[in-house]
Length: 512
Image 1 (cartoon, one colour):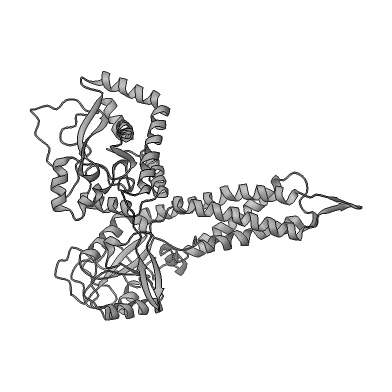
Image 2 (cartoon, one colour):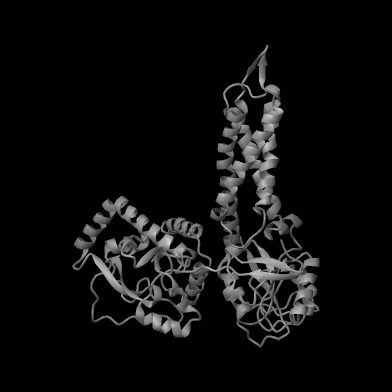
């Protein structure tokens, strides 16, 4: 399918536009519309996301009721009970909608929805049971009223079936969506207002993480981009050209980043975008202080953003550290056979100690010995020294590959990290937190990376928010610091649980 507008490699659309020419090449996303049916275009742009999700939930709830009716022993059609049980389908969908589970959010996983979906199913079951008890009369034989419990039996089975089917169908939809975004570049086309560092960061993130489902196709700002701008996205001129840019690119998303444009003009631009059917997202000017728990209140019609605060020295983190130690002790007990077996294999694989201890920086800049199973042979002095790539974090295989056979297996499965459970028991680390770094690199990164030192507000972790997003080994340290600070400022036990689950999934993949 071909779009009405298709960008060339030189930044000019094949269809003439009223907007200014680009100063650089266009985004690699090709907007293709003309030669394909309209529904294919809408499918690629995910414009039917809400309708599809609602339809799948209805389908899952339908089968939950049908299976439950088949599962209940004996007939269920007496006094229209089977018919009334179908009320569960619209009831559960309405409850899911009230929990904002049909709202499209960036990088929202099935794990985030699991608890509210299960709660919605349980509430929907109770509501339907209440309706059934009111509408289904008791079975009466002569003057004797026979208690009729089958409604509760049926609804119990509906609850079990729905609690399995609805999350399972949502999981399949999420996996399919992720596959289409990664392999076939499904997603929405986005315009960005702004041309500074934040706009550059937004475009970089969209391209690095296709799971967001956003593809940058144009920039708008009152400051014209210079020739050869590294953003590599078409510049459409000032914000006055929004409508022209939207029609030229087919964009359905607008992200407003901090820029030189006045707030009053940006507000009018946002209203125009909404009138054009474009979803608008705004980067707050105090972006470093705004966490996921921020909310908006109104004072006489003036919106006020209330910022949430996480205190790393408060009682919440005291509970986290106590639960971490208990979990580490239980974990060591459960995996003790594996732990001992790995220790024996490390000892016989090559000369040297079982554990490798390396100085790392933890909470409040304190140095501690981070433990790992030794995975390498002693270094050869004749080999050249390792030099870290600019902008990358140390890690992975540095320099000459000295890994032993068992070391390669442990590195690939992250089993070499298991001794860090001992660090958790000693109170030096947590199960979840920023990964600790060596002192010499910390001093360097604190001078080079914005807000890098802020990650030392909490204890270092065996796994972290950055690691489950693929930032392992020799990856960007600036990106790691950004993810680590996000974790600290949005910390909750629920987020810790999510990271632990994602870590289990991540170690199933190959890693250096």
